[in-house]
Each structure stands twice: as structure tokens, then as C-alpha cells.
Image (cartoon, rainbow, N blue to C red):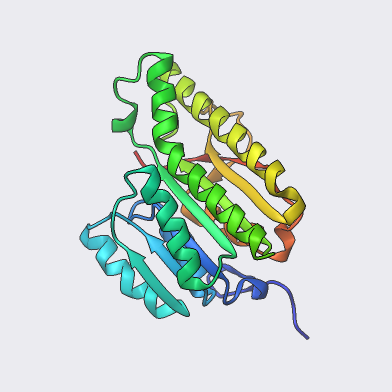
Amino acid sequence: MFVSVVKRQDQTEIHPDVLGARVLITGLSHTNGVDVARAFAEHKTRLVIQSADNAPQFTALVPVLADDAQEMQLYNETVASSDAAVRLAQTAAQVLGGLDVVINLVSITREDLFGRESLEDIEDLASEKLLAPTLITQVVGNRMRVTWSEGLILNVVSMPAPETAEEAAIAGVLRAALTSITQAEAKKWADDAIRVNAVGPRALIKTATDGACLSGDPEIASLALYLASKYGRQLSGHVFDAEAVKA
């Protein structure tokens, strides 16, 4: 008897309907999104990965992903402009003959938070970090609509858990901006069965009574697979809480 979800020995869920999907992952690095990339590679997807990471740890990861995936192409360069973001989305769709899943990984470090004292500074940070994934969402959504393809776009924003009221305020602005983008894009593409969801930072300083949230790459990878599978086809416009464990 066939089952819709199978668990491997390491307890990672296998979703048969994700096998062979055409997947674009942007913003991957050896410190952000490794489990996400491995989860989709292990589902024998056709992968296009964008990364500006030249660290030895990432160099060692690339052949592992390539061996697991059905096929993989790596764009090892920075998406430094609006035009570059649009070109990346268009190129990935052309290379794979369309896209079924897009995951944009956005990493915010403590260095990014330094010196962000005014609301304008924080809004500039949000614009800087969310511009590329927003443009990619729009380009891919339009491509999926034109080709009558159902699909998932997941934007994942990771940042260290807030330790001060100032950092909590920054997380709040980032999460509000991400929520606004997610809900607007989800509504825009809803009639075309194109789902847009996000994972965003907690906007609160952690306390002992806080509710559960995603913690680290493995849980985000499990969520991404779930949303990409048939189980996630009714979910769009949602922003899930995550607590980054990296500084």
C-alpha cells in the first residue's frame, strides 16, 4: 500500500508528490538554509540554487546537493540589484522549463542591526532585505500564472532572537513588512492556485511562557516540504514565527 508521507530512519518526512519538482532556492549559505536545500535535494528535485557564499563549508556542501538532486545548477553570485533579481527568476524558470517551488532565504545578522536607531534606518533595512525576494515572488508568480502552473513561493527571513527592546522593535518592523508583502501577493495570485507564505522573526524578547515557534533550519525545512506538498495546497498568506539560533 502506498502512503502519502513516509519517514526515513532519521525521521525526515518524505513527500512523494514533491519528488522531481522544479525548485529555485535563493540566498543559501553554509549558515542559512542548509537543511532546506538538502531536504529538497533528497526529494530528487531539479534544483537551481543561488548563493554568494564562497566559504569552504559551502564548497563542500555543493557536491552533496548535486549528488542527491535529480539535477542542480549553482549561481554563485550576489543578487545585488533589482535587475539581477528579475534576471535570476527568469533564468531559473527558463532553465527548468518552469518552477513549482521557490524558496527565498533572507539572513539578517547582528551586524545588519548595528546602528539602526531611527524608524527610517529600520525601514531602509527592511527594504534592502525584502526587495529581491519580493521581485522574485512577482516574477515567478506571473510565470506560474502564464503557464497555468500551481506552485509555492516561500520567503524565509531569519535573524537572531531579539535581546533588547531595540532589536525587538526592528524584528517587529521586519515582520510587519513581510506580512504585508505576503498577504498582498497571496491575494494577488490566489485565483491561479499560486501560494505565497513566509517565515518571519519573532518580534518579542523570549520568555519562559512564550508559545512554540520554528527553531532552526530542520524545522523550517519540514515546513517548506509540507507547504510544497499536497497538504499545503490550501495554505496561503500565512507568516510563521521562527526563532533564529545564529548570530
